[in-house]
Length: 168
Image (tube, rainbow, N blue to C red; front, top):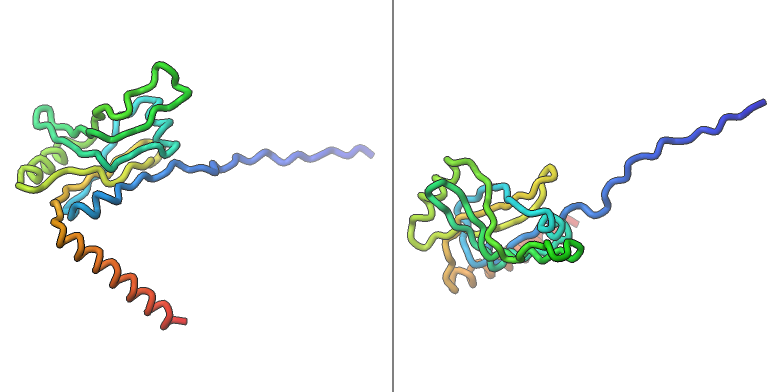
């Protein structure tokens, strides 16, 4: 009697290291966010590799709007050089173009014309394999506003703690 050996098909392994989400927590502290918009971002290959490794700093970044042709530009965001790229690596803080529809750009251009309002990058992440940047229209907070935000956050945390003890 001849026995056949049965081999199970090798299943595709899930990636154990999904692409990270880089948050700009400082922006939400320094600015009151009025509106947000998800934009695509034009990256070079070595920049994509660095972003996937999580080697990005959004803290110093800001967004400028250009009226003609209508588009966004991301300035001062540091994407670390990707070592294996060698001499053809990108410049870490180069200006990068953001991709958005013309009507969205014009809407944000009108919002930014107001005094004390600026565009800041809030988050950098991957969606369906494409790099996206969440930008926000922010109005600068004064120091007393920041103290109020800290106090509100602490009181909410305390309330949540009391409520969770009550549920037990």
